[in-house]
Image 1 (cartoon, rainbow, N blue to C red):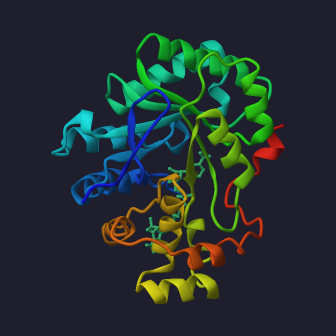
Image 2 (spheres, rainbow, N blue to C red):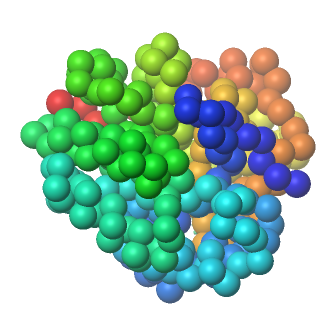
Image 3 (cartoon, rainbow, N blue to C red):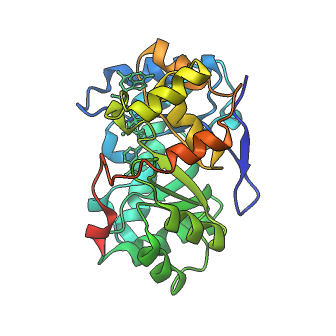
Length: 273
Ligand SMILES: NC(=O)c1ccc[n+]([C@@H]2O[C@H](COP(=O)([O-])OP(=O)(O)OC[C@H]3O[C@@H](n4cnc5c(N)ncnc54)[C@H](OP(=O)(O)O)[C@@H]3O)[C@@H](O)[C@H]2O)c1
């Protein structure tokens, strides 16, 4: 079974459910096998970043896997210290080299670094206009960052990747993205396991005979959001993909909409105003 596809604002398609590969302890020795396992299970979308230090391992997995390059959607991101026009251009080339690819599907500005984000975006627009990347986008952009971007962007980002879960519910950003034609992508969709025993989640999970992790992934999918749960365990990579044969009901979504408590696992983008 394959993930549903979402059509981005330039017509290209992305698998709505992908694999994240950020290792919190930077032990990247697990990345290659994780990506190969994911491709075997049916994932066709891999999310990495220069700062994860595992683009090379992702590249090796893509080379060794039995799936054609054009069937796989690869995202990577320009890190904060590589921002600015010239630096971002160089960072793109470094990522291509590390991944052993001649194009990336989606290149994101990882965080909205205040003094540099405009020039960084101009660099991504140049790469895009030269046809060297299939789509460009941003990450950790909330409404104020998007409003500012509207004043200087010639290309509307295809994607905005943010932390967005029932516990960190970024509805206003989702609405703004919809208005701008930007697809929303949620990272850390399972809150890194922090909420696995939440009673409301457990109740919904029991009703559907699923895990609380699967319920959180399904919440993103049922809200029309792209998402990238991370695991480097073969079993969990498979479990996290086994969410394509059920949907949450209205009552479940209503119960999940009460869970916002501001829990974040990553920085607050409002600190990047
Ligand atoms: N743009 C950004 O600023 C940004 C920030 C953070 C993350 N991201 C992206 O989003 C991806 C996902 O976010 P994340 O890695 O922060 O958090 P996450 O996907 O919510 O959770 C990953 C954690 O949960 C564990 N896990 C996964 N599936 C599980 C299951 N079924 N049962 C029990 N434990 C499970 C994983 O351990 P095991 O690996 O041992 O299974 C890992 O410790 C990242 O990998 C990265 O690609 C982007």
